[in-house]
Length: 327
Image 1: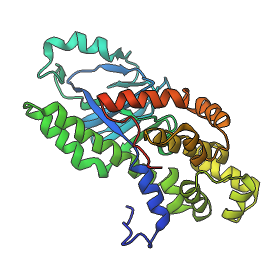
Image 2 (image 1 turned 60 degrees about the horizontal axis):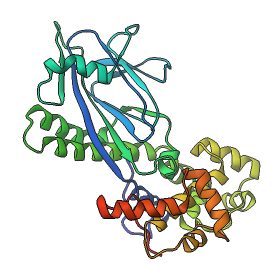
Image 3 (image 1 turned 135 degrees about the vertical axis):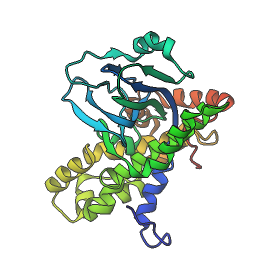
Image 4 (image 1 turned 90 degrees about the vertical axis):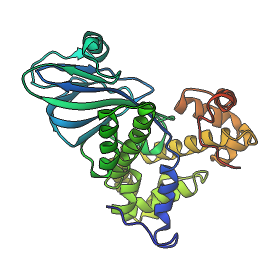
């Protein structure tokens, strides 16, 4: 478990990542509480805009992502899948899973409360909570970009939140779904933080001092004109060794990581109506708007102006899509 610094001066580099984790915006929702009392299988299609997850409350089953090998999961396991990843869950390997929407349609007669679905049988095979979460711009957020396609396993840190979810679902009251969804927000963030302590940007800072020193500086000075030579010198190792080690640790080359950090910063800057596109470009390390706009479109799929317009609409309806960054 990560020990909390007593002051900002204890481990200032950790606070760079703390501020990054604080920019993750999660909006979770429970899809269904599924109780299987006979053999069955359910398929959860990937969605480009949503992270999928499940929690095993009781029993055990097998899970496969994108038709890959089967992995056994059991009570207490929590799994998160990056946007677009499909997963199948079966009580017995070899069963053909049914799409979740079709499965729920078949089970509507057995639905207990709008969230509970029970497949009757002679004994309990498993109980699980399935859900999804919208992560603001997960495709460029440095933390999410450094996560593997799936995180599967026990998550002690999320235990209290998931226990609260199960308690709320066991006795649904007015407002239960909203309460459940907010607890799921906490569980998702706890799982991400737990994983990040071992790998990703936070894990690198904690466990790889040479690469971690560079990662912390990139986050501290994203607009700096970083070169591979300068980053390798900062780490104190050769360029080739640095590039290989960085990719192995963070799942992407150094230059790509720098670009993603810059684009995430740019998106937050554009969420501030007082910051112009030219200012966002300069504060993100680009000398002119044209180069910035080209990079922004390549990474995010949209122009800075489009993001700015989206923000104006979003602020007047739902609040900002990005956490605004002051100029």
